[in-house]
Image: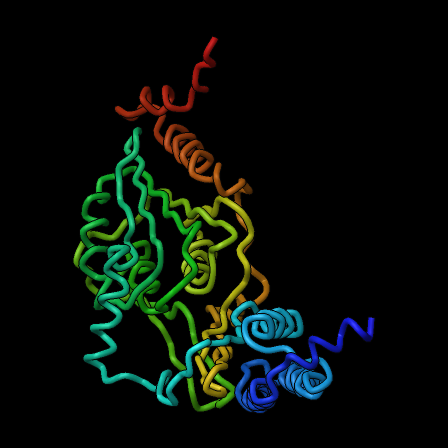
Amino acid sequence: MLAAMVPAIASANPAETKEAVAALRIAADRIETDYIDAARAPVVAARLRAEAAALRRRPKQGEALASEVTTLLRALSADPHFGFRYSPEAMPETIFAPRPPEAAAAAAQRTARVNNFGVLKAERLPGNIGLIDFDQFTAPALMRRPLAAAMELLRHCDALIVDLRYNEGGDAEGSALALSYFLPETPTRILVRFETRNAGEMLEVRTAGPLEAPRFLDRPVYILTGPATFSAAEFFTATLQQAGRATVVGVKTRGGAHPVRRIRLTPHYGMMLPTTRGVVPGGKGLQGAGIAPDLPAEPQLALAEARRAALTSLLAAAPDDMMAERWKELLQPAPVAP
């Protein structure tokens, strides 16, 4: 076994090992000072320093090291936002520096336009059930117009299904804008509060005032969740579930409520460091807890389950409605082919 280890040690690049050790030590220092969980930060940092010391005896670099350290960070912290990254190309020192507002806005628009700024799909299903698919949440300046167009299309639906099964989050204020369509305009309410380890730093995200399309109020709403539903998508889901405005259909979400800061550690290594905590009204954090569905369903079956729930609810509430016969028809099992 020792003989088998010799070639691996001999082939290791000392310069690359030195950089990997430095990256781990810098990461440990940043975690100790900036990681949002102040109680857990020293434990995570100490383990990274131990890993840095071990690298000299067991060299590992590049993608293999990045994957291993990412797994370790997430296991130690129970925080899926953590990430340790490797870049084959040297990263400039300013790679994660804030861009001028105009350049940042232009870059965000180029990236987000391919999925219509997060509003991937809006359609009317049989039985006058609406469906809107949020692929992600983008900044309100980008999302406002396509969101309003979608909500205008769906304004006369009797129930609405919101598909977040593949939404991994995004911009919290974009999520708040989308949420505002399902909550009254007044009084405005705090949706989430973001805190750092600095007691003087706090950001409150509130519901929006006047919107460009009518709000979807006093009608059933169903939210579809899947294994990918994360971060700002969980904030959206938890808010409407806790307000009694939506029924969640799918699987328990991952539990991510710690926005991250991207940090360049060395020319070839970087880190995603959770530095902020999102807290919903009542003081509850979503980190690690996730959101349990009201109606459990496998993700691939969640849409059909939500449609059945919506039709059943509509029929029970209005058995004499002009759509009642159509709702009954849609609730009948599909005929089995001979």
